[in-house]
Amino acid sequence: MSNEPFYLRYYSGHSGRFGHEFLEFDLRTIGEGSSAAVRYANNSNYRNDSLIRKEMCVSAATIAEVKRIIKESEVLKEDDSKWPHKNKDGRQELEIRIGNEHISFETAKIGSLADVTDSDDPDGLRVFYYLVQDLKALIFSLISLHFKIKPI
Image (cartoon, rainbow, N blue to C red; front, side):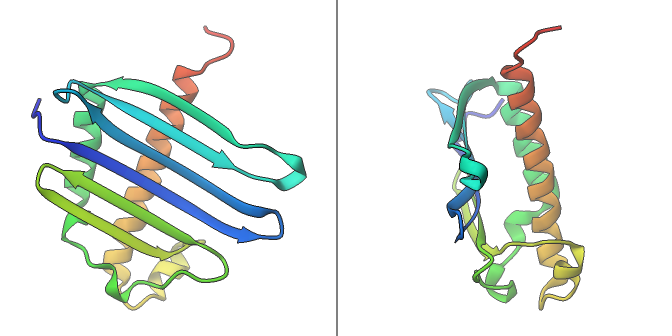
């Protein structure tokens, strides 16, 4: 396990009829990098829902897997200059720091693959889109496993 600093943050949100609604999560290595803190927040005011916050620690193996997913996606080679800009429908942000590499993306919310195909940089945006899908699935799985109300 490499002890290089690691940080990942994803945000997707908009301000609308129900106020500021968003989904956000981040992973940050702790100490020498043998574990990481994961923070998750989901704010929806629809039907008077409230802010959901979860925090947990994950192992070095989990950090290594997230780094592998990021590196294999090759998102660190992408450039968001031709991606759709944030608009009334909201925005997405992805920030990644692995060792000395640091990248930050911002784009409009992507509703479907048609939005990706119709963009000025469909190949780069596709890499971003699939990486975000993978990261969200992993985080939701970790939360579901960690905060199981009725353990098996």
